[in-house]
Image 1 (spheres, rainbow, N blue to C red):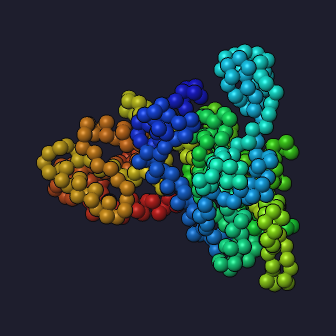
Image 2: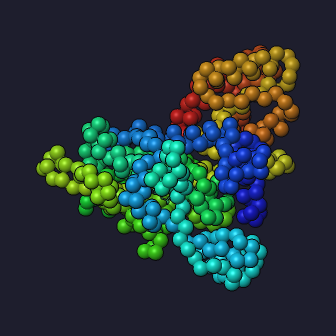
Image 3: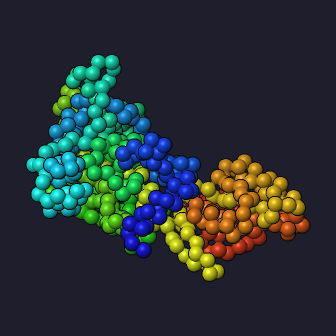
Length: 441
Ligand code: GAP
């Protein structure tokens, strides 16, 4: 299967099953922006909940934050984004399309759209921040930006959080939220978009301990991705060379995934030193030092950042889970998502639409709903077709009510991955599923 075929298949499957739709599709779509449908919204929520649980709930030393998207414009001067958050842009003088100058093909001088050679303008720096106006007057004084990273909301709240949560360095602040970048060349489905979500954590440490903490977070984040079931052979680290480092970073490692279109980053671990806090101190005129309660020593903490793209990790999870298999002479497509991530945990079927089976199946599903287990009821089509639909949607368990259920109150549970079927008492289905979800943590 070619790489483009895999991506095409993923785009079509995720649309067919209600994971991801093109934004404003009825108007022909908005440029590289995507909407998450019923299953996509659940998957995204599950990823964010697992991240939040690991980062905030399971740790004493990390606090959560939900900062606003719009910030004081000086924030972006201090952070270096007004000056330096740019990509080199060239325009083809034949077809007038614009590209990133470092794009493969463009670098060699050929326009990827019209094929004209050596017709590009000189590269100019294009700032990736979206600009808008705050209030009714649209002048330079009212200009604000849509945040291109969530991190800055954390830095400007560093002392608010530290003081109110009574945290001592080392400690972290975590947040999940939207970020916006006016990418010149977005693409590869939800890989590079103009509106996306980040799950970022800034860990404030004493200068001199930053390298140790960097290694800790690097290992911890990779371990988390493995725990989501992402295949080991598709994960690797990539260290940034001097020409790749962002303006704020002393050291950076990407966690990369082997996408159908090649190895690419989906999370970054950065040693941002005291760059951001020192700059905010300088630009705001407010002291952002931490006073060590032990010795009274004052210092600006160093920051180790973990920065995950939520949409990008979704693409990783979908691509990694996508399988085409042959089962009993028939082809099936499976999304082998980790049960904790699967949007629907159980599908409930009556084997046939008679003999009171639909009523029993509906009652069983009602029990799942009461137990807060996301489930789906389906009575249409052959049982084989219903299984296939759920395999494609990534549902780990299918529960079928059949003739025997009326006699002894048992149902079958079919496992998406092993295809094994076992019989379980109807009133034990919810605890059976709960137990497996907890065990798979
Ligand atoms: N605060 C640091 C920071 O933003 P980054 O490497 O620019 O670092 C972090 O971005 C992560 O955000 C990336 O690894 C990626 O997963 C995600 N990301 C960045 N730009 C994106 C885009 N245009 N579309 C989707 N995700 C993006």
